[in-house]
Length: 105
Image (cartoon, rainbow, N blue to C red; front, side, top):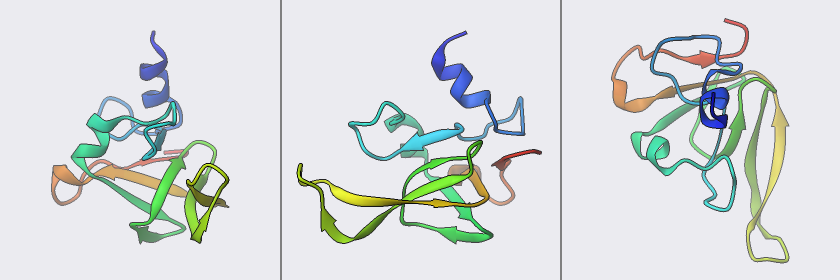
């Protein structure tokens, strides 16, 4: 089994259906970046609210990273903060009522 398959199945809660991976990041520098999956469009619900400003998420660990205003780190990358809570993810290209990846399904 490859790392890619493990990330997809781990913590998703819904197996055998087309759901996003457990951990995904928009930054190309991250090892969790997957341009192919991001191109499909990922919907994120954090603490029951649909969010569009998520930079990275992990469903099994229950956290998201969002930008902290306009602040930049010493490498010129946006500073992010980690928020904890329930995370749900789905592919937006699947239309209405897509399968949702969430912890503990």
